[in-house]
Image 1 (cartoon, rainbow, N blue to C red):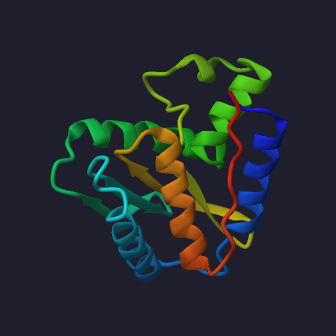
Image 2 (cartoon, rainbow, N blue to C red):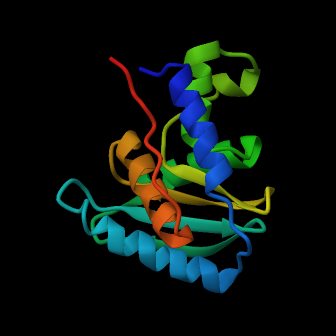
Length: 163
């Protein structure tokens, strides 16, 4: 499904989607962008959102129709980004390209190897993450990074997926 070009595009996303500053007010504003963009996807499934900043969930919203199932996925995605300080999709790409290198990569009940969580880096310092849940995982990632690009005023980067 992924090739080295996928990993290179993921690296480009991480380098581009960096904040100059971030606080609870920015989290709220980003949360509103996520909700607005989610309206383009509600024909697929309802979504849930969480923004964690300095280990505190400063924004969380569950659209009508979401459930504890979404919370569970967000928890697992959060564990992945907390461990790696990288997007949850990157964990999947690296696992697929390079195989299992560490024991934590076998713990699918605690970590999520899917798209839908992205780190908040302020001037290249890890401070938290943005998490979405509800869509098929590649759409979760796409929707999330489109929202980040809009919020940051940056271009969108597409992660190539191969058959």
